[in-house]
Length: 295
Picture 1 (cartoon, rainbow, N blue to C red):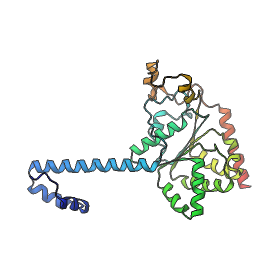
Picture 2 (picture 1 turned 90 degrees about the vertical axis):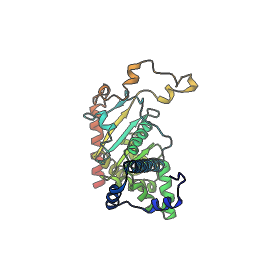
Picture 3 (picture 1 turned 90 degrees about the horizontal axis):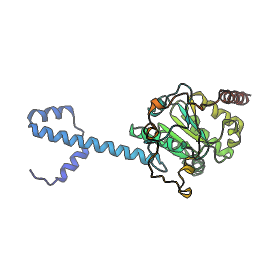
Picture 4 (picture 1 turned 30 degrees about the vertical axis):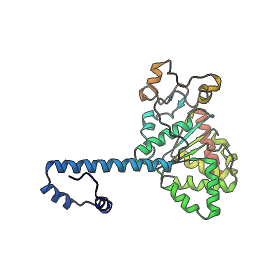
């Protein structure tokens, strides 16, 4: 057999959709070795398509850096009551179009976890869009001025999961807040959003320059969302080279290192879970804001 690939074969392969009738006819006269060769060809094609799809989804996600969850320490991540770690890592919130709010001070691992979950979603063939929130607002404003806002919104709307990083770090003007509201309202009960923020709900009115707009956003998030609180020391400070930390060293506590991703070692009711009074305060704030918006 001629090992040099015929150019005509490439052309036919690009055009061809193989029907069941053609496969049945081929199976009728092909030798076992020929059938095996075709199996290998089709397996290679399917694998190449999966790789191409994964790479395409990864490019479209626009992560600032690719991070997985191997070795991620959940010790200082406070999960809501009744919500287990394996539920979070299983991404069950995405098909249900539920939102997650990652709340905590800077450097606690919120963005890392959000990207890690986004990577798992891509591995499952789901579309993800990562945006630094202040930058997204600027892009939306530019798209509106250029007349391309609808195109940008359609691209974001194709995602199964949207990650809005550093939500509220920089206040928006009213026009920017309304543009961002379009994305949040348009995603309600359609797709999931992960918010990473260091701003508590009671201060979101200041961020959005409009209490009623903030109330409308919070109302949607709370309805189908969960709050995860990130505590402990800053991971960046604890690993800082400037302070002589050796980030390449292995953890001294092997049990902790092995159990970072073990759901049995992470409980839905951690020792330092959110205080019930704080939860009730949040809900009270939401209801008050909602009454304001209706009034």
